[in-house]
Length: 274
Image 1 (cartoon, rainbow, N blue to C red):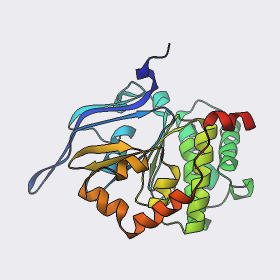
Image 2: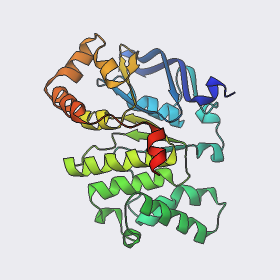
Image 3: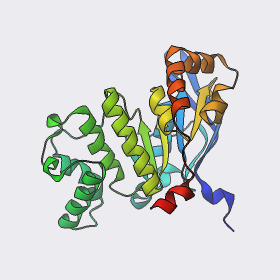
């Protein structure tokens, strides 16, 4: 029998994040709890200053909490070995590609840094990931400056997936994209989530992306996760931020689109078609 704890990919318990500034101390998170299970697409939403991206950085191991526990696959992110760090891929908001590197060199960079594989194998792996995100090999030698915004996102996603991580972190994945490119990128993310069995943690302000991809939404307010659940469960929670964020004009339009969509089929039904 599988232990329920084995299904938890990210476990955050009694987390405190406190920043010191000229006015004293700013408490961003206070006794925050969040548990993310295998296979979820969990979206973090909240107002400015609620620490959404800070949480991503703590899961990634780039920032330590002031107090409390953050565990990724049973380990503190800061204690992961180089091989263990490969369990987490990160797509930064603006791609964060190296301008002096070609597309293929950007994708291959994390794998090359390990110094464990020959160059031809690294190049092959990078080409596979390039095509996995919907780009042709002809783009491999281009510079990031030659790419559209949507292509930059795809190259950055390929780099985030080069180590085949089970956990993928997304910071505003559709920011800066026009509606058509945003829809296309969401389709790509949905397909990769299903095909690769990824667990995804996403920060987004875009309500269409939020409703399109999330299997669960966690709302940050009052220095904690005040509610988590499906979109409909979260919207039903009585809180001023939720009312303003989800039930304003933009929220209503996104909700109408959500209601118009057919309910997703169970994974077992999709598996029978494959």
